[in-house]
Length: 103
Image (cartoon, rainbow, N blue to C red; front, side):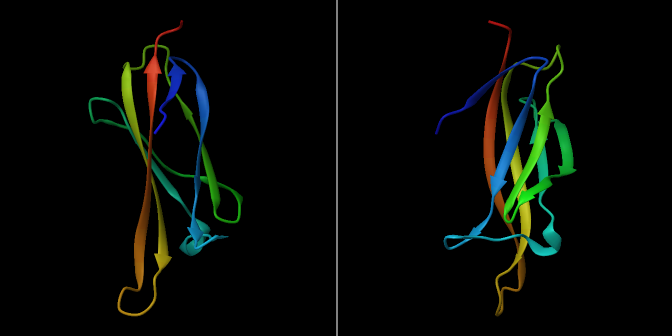
């Protein structure tokens, strides 16, 4: 896995794709949620993403000029109907990025 590097004070786009087999599929209600955690475990973002296309959601993450350096964790979540005895359950996609100083 490759980790994206982001310099302090910049904004970048996080994207998640949800599929059922090979078909892009929207979560229940057409909503995907994102949480981003700083290296110390505190919450940076708790929001919903914007729909870019069927099964594709984005969110622009901004870092402050004095943001903590280190590895940030991204958790995308959508709720899907798995049918049968499972019914509606969350599907979580994870990612991360590294905040660095200006180089």
